[in-house]
Image 1 (cartoon, rainbow, N blue to C red):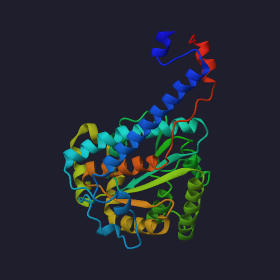
Image 2 (cartoon, rainbow, N blue to C red; image 1 turned 90 degrees about the vertical axis):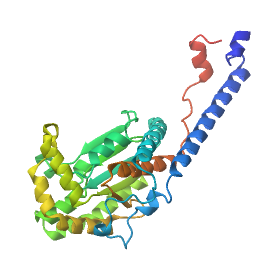
Image 3 (tube, rainbow, N blue to C red; image 1 turned 135 degrees about the vertical axis):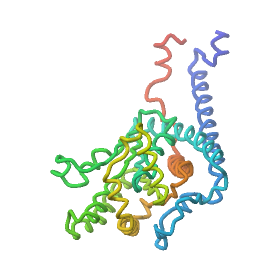
Image 4 (tube, one colour; image 1 turned 30 degrees about the horizontal axis):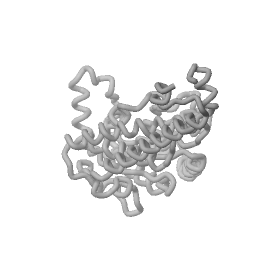
Length: 322
């Protein structure tokens, strides 16, 4: 019996409860350490990105310096270290959120990534989520609506890809394409696409009210940076697949897109689902910001590990622990 006690197990119920309490304390201590670690990471910012980069009524997309790095004074090496450390914390919080989701908690996260072609949406997914368990992560890229999509309301295909309880869904493009593209191409009457501002606001309010945190990101790139990325794609056979001639058509109408997105931000940046406009010419910086926004969002859920949904003593007994 001495060896059992040394291992923290005893035959008496009181001793078993003591072990459970000790383990609960260790879990609480670990959660506290993770929260402290997250606070330390956030301390690298002179001001929180959620404050600096949130869209406000006085914000003008065309005035944003795509090569800047607001709130961060470090270099790329420091930024990449931050991303690696933050990714580890994101993985911890994601496992915690997933575990609670299994037990019925409704917290979940929807990340909307928007930006002009070659603004770095794919790289953000690869870097920020490098250490996250694939179980609990859902990525979906929205292209041109299919015939099946067009047979339904425009939000039908969006609703199909929303995160389940405890999950993170990442949208590469989103419901906002159903406002911007009809506006640019003239494929729908103006009254139709303009009505979608209010419809999407209602849709997002419904999501937020059910426990879904919405992080809406627009990656602000410059025309010069986009040109360089297009040239790299055309010079590298392994990148040919990334290039589409339609990308150049959108580039030719850059100013029209800027005007369309400006109105999107003005009409759909709300208190429950704000837009964040992130300078993206320095790819490492935009990845840092997305990592910070996601990590702090999940941290603020203030979740703890769900309790054991079983009789622990009975389970130990069946496993041969006296």
